[in-house]
Length: 170
Image (cartoon, rainbow, N blue to C red; front, side, top):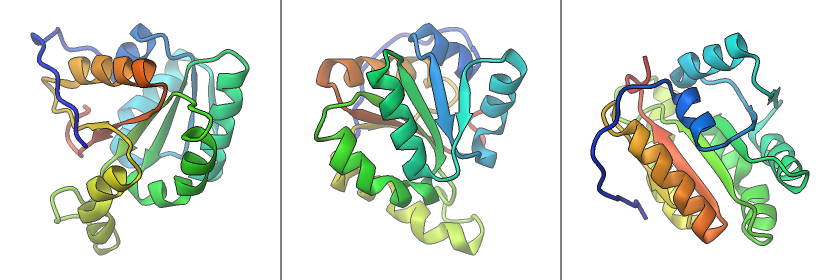
């Protein structure tokens, strides 16, 4: 269930800047090479980031942070999305916890390592099955897609994903 809204392009900014512009103030997740530049920015700028040992733990941390008044975003690789299904459906969806998933999409082009090909091909159908709206930005639409994802998350009080293909981030 991809959502697309039309906007004029905005100047290039780092993904962290875009998340901070949308008032995200608590970050958690599991490191992913697709999101390397984002994680580097988080570390360099000292924003509130709590590393998680697995994606399901990250959903729990982010949910708790939300109930504590934070605006959470989670970083994860698409292979870890399956790990997060239980808390996404039995916690976040039921209690309408607005969470932003920043998902590194390994295997998006079918040419990644063998272990990423199956999940790469099933990432979007999995998000659709979970009824999680998602955005697939390229470098030119990243700013607008993050803004639209945050707006969707707020309007519907739901989990929303921004799915990042390799090469989109610097």
